[in-house]
Length: 160
Image (cartoon, rainbow, N blue to C red):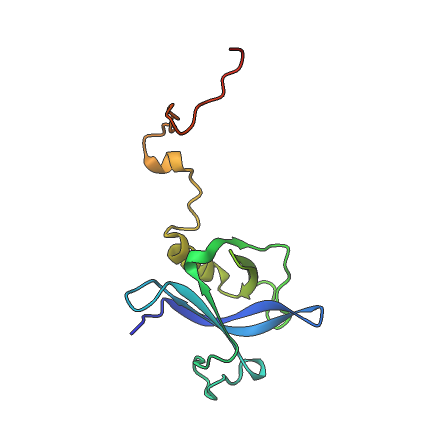
């Protein structure tokens, strides 16, 4: 049985007849395991989140309105300060963020956005989102990687 890493209600921004609207969505984050790949599952909530496709108030399990995003397709998870939050949430508590994948970009918003960004970065990129050090600093010795001459490539020398 698969273990859920994080789940909860978020808002997903989408286009409907050319108008951008926020939709309540149930988001489930699964880590990679022997039972399946690491992924994000997004379920549309019916009636503004009061009921789910299964008819109860718990998490939805119906494939109707379900989207799956593989974590291996994630390119970045970054804050979206220029995006407004849903009118249903107070702006002080809500923050928007982008989930960019190889297929498309998702605009998501949540009151607990920091927890979602941290969880997504941890599973998709296997690192802490607050860590902005370069690869040289992560190696610990602070030295730069030197390029060596070989048969596959050679540096371009001028003035010869």
